[in-house]
Every structure is written in structure tokens, then in C-alpha cells.
Image (tube, rainbow, N blue to C red; front, side, top):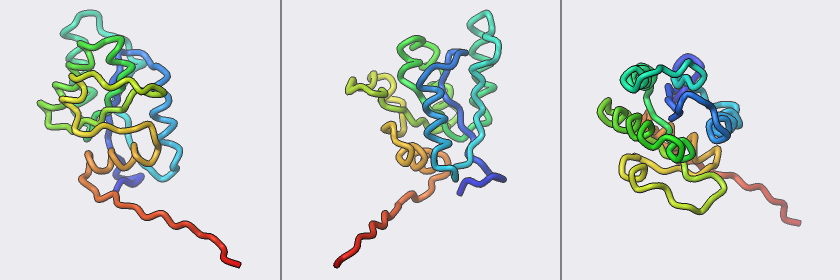
Length: 151
């Protein structure tokens, strides 16, 4: 189970700039208040100039992670870059959790679906459970308790 001492290490797809989905993802991860993670993605780092340097930088960011999260919004802007990130994750035997399109019923591109180990809805609980399942193979069965009063 993730803890402060043993957080899940994750990488979130990016093209060296933050976007609304990137920010939103971390808002969802912070919402439960009890999910511990370490982010190895560096969207604020200076973007390397040439293609091979970009790829090497991404390899360094992905290597220490336990799970890769793919944002379809980034794929729309930089499909080749996201496919590189996904293919490297697969080669490094890192599971991939792909997020659905936020606020849209548009289906994910086939390339993302084919490489993803799990597709996740934009829901705090589903996201945390998917990361725990994929990164640590944890059983995430939860029970909801509903209390109601009978008069």
C-alpha cells in the first residue's frame, strides 16, 4: 500500500508544458488526501532542442516510475511524442493507465487503447484504484457504507 515512506512513483505524459488535464489529474490525486505518490514527470523542465535529446530526457523521467498515466489532450497536440512515451513504458515494462477524454464522449484514439493496460474515467476513486492496481497489483475492492435511519 502506498505510504509517505513508499509512494507510488508515476510519470504523466507531457510535451514540456502543463495543460488543463495535467493540472486536473493532480487535483484528483490530491483530493482523497490519503494517496501518496511521487511525480517523475518534468513538464516545466527546459525542452531539449533536438528529437533524440527530447527522447533521452523522457527516458530519464519514465525510468524511475512504476506506472505511466497518459492524457489524451497531450496526444492531440503531440501524438508522436506520446506514442514514444507509451512505447518506451512498454519496453521498460511499466504499466500504462490512459485517461478518457475529459468532458467529452469522444473515444480514445486506437493507438492509446492498444497500448494502455487500463483506461480510466475522470473520477478520483477510479484513478487512485487504477494506479494502485497497475503499479502495485493491489486489490482495490472497496465497500461503501450507506447509513440511513428508519423511523
